[in-house]
Length: 335
Image (cartoon, rainbow, N blue to C red):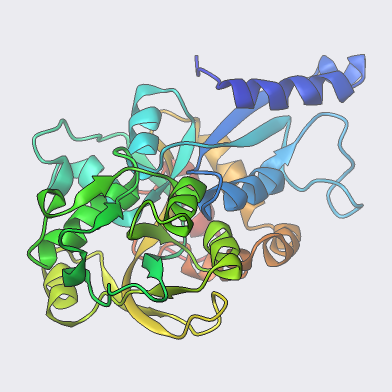
């Protein structure tokens, strides 16, 4: 039996209160999506996808102003510490699914990389690739930090252990010949890191997220900030040592007053457990890519527009869940 978080239970209770007794008698299926901090991209995207795949009893029919989700399903986005937390929660059965960086998913599944020495999480399965997540390294505009090397001796937030940000921040530091020992490291998430930078309590912080990220948008609208590039020899070493990273840019205007900056990115994926029912995951995948869901994605979040069925298999380095695989075969995306 899956354990439900308080947040998930509150969503379920709210739905139950609103349903008539006849609808209450129908079968309900609760499905959790582990996301990340509420200030980052995972959380709002998770809510958007949860809306797309949910169809509580009593909902109007698809195409008639109602839900095109899975009959009887109530999905909810659950805030978490991020990628590492999500793979652990899926494996332990605390959550049904979660968003995970592609590198973390592969390492967890194979017991390699940063997960070396830990038992491989062989039951992890992919539902879909979603969008690129760029590494943001943020400092105040008048800061002397202009490269990763300049972080030495500075107060830098690497996010919480258990997050994909923490993993990738440490890999970036390593590629530039640095480590946590060379910094005064803090472990703040989202809004807390932005507030600390704004108030002069840290000098810089890392975020791995799809742009534009809400907390950074808010920060850039209140103080002048800059994005520190992750490029040159250090970035080349990072990409050579860890093939999940690729060159990218955060475009000018993504954040107020910030020009284009070179950086690296990984992919964000939605994963689950092999133990989840095949028919359920098939129906969830089908509902996610329903043409009506497209409207939710396009209007729900800036990253929604780049979440497409055509790119749903890009960079997936772990096996697909059989239910998702069945859908992609029907859609002609795999043989």
